[in-house]
Amino acid sequence: MIHILEVLIGFSSGVIIGAVFISLLIVLNVIPRLIQLGKAQGHLLKIMFAAILGILCGSYFSFTTLPVAWMQSEWVFLPIGLLHGVFNGILIAALAETLNVFPIFTKRLRLEKYLILLLFAIVCGKVFGSLFQWFFIVE
Image (cartoon, rainbow, N blue to C red; front, side, top):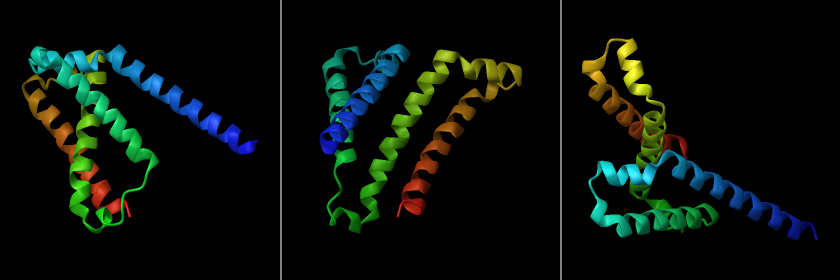
């Protein structure tokens, strides 16, 4: 009986977290904004398929372990860490754009001409931080 209750609680928690995540993506207009910025209106089905496939693969790898043969090479984790960094960067950019943080931040500090450099530094920091975590912290 306890195991059934644990399964129900775990499944319910997963459904709630998934619903909140999808709600966040919808409220922030992440996917429509990516389509607009990438001028990819003709590729809507491909983008939807990629998003669904990414969610399914992420869920699968969250609940399974990688085969031992994959663990032999740290080069396997390079694209995984890079994709995590890109995803987190896109999510952070969507949050920042929603709040208009960067224009306000650069105007107050009189750094308007360095906005591109600031964004590039944030992206590089996130990517290098993710790579550092994958190569040196994850055991």
